Length: 317
Image 1: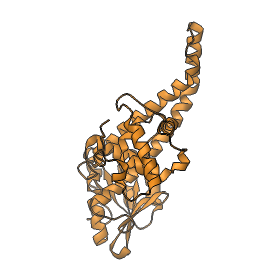
Image 2: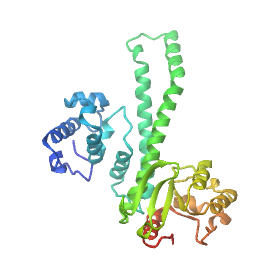
Image 3: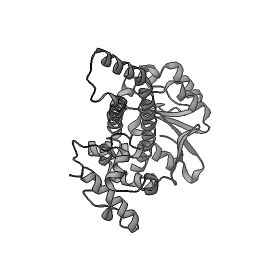
Image 4: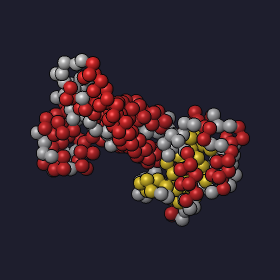
């Protein structure tokens, strides 16, 4: 199998992590070998089957941190797992591999689109696997009209629950991936996590905090996915000090004159939208200024540079 990850370039774990102890390297090498022995286009393996195939101890014995490190380095291997949703950081790496690019202003929105496409693929695969498992009891049965009716009723009864469960999981992971993508975007312009900005997780008071000079001021950023809804207004109203919102909003109709007045009233400095959405904002709304008389609505490709300016000057240009 040819490794498709530009970061590892077919390197074995010992070359990728030369400082790890021998036991961890042995486990990583077993994982690498197990995946390398799968045919890239045809073979999938379940999560449990992976550990059996590789002759590895139980997942908890390998350790979650080690597994995350492995899949961030070899993200394409996760595509071979049939019953798991990739973690947020692995989703980003998969998108970068598919597009053959890094996180920067030029590729920021394209990477998010690739993440959405991949999540959709995973969702379909998980749904198929669960329905296939649900119907496994019918294998080998000679079907007649009654048997067909029974299997259709079984699917109809269970599908809504399966679909809801998978949807909730994929939406949650995709949202986390969006937050991590914004963090990587900040790092791409030279900002340092822990020094120039911090990850707040998905707290009620924002997702990212960017520090001004000597930390005398800070800009709190609320990161959303593709919809603003009422949650954005509520989040911004609850935040104190300098604040902004960023995301991949796809509905310009959400940004009405009324909501825009609310954003300005609460002291929002900027709302970052994809260029395609920004171009479709109604004329009066698109030109609204924040309370400092600077543009409220901005391209999300500008987000990282604006945060870099804030870290140096304590204000958004």
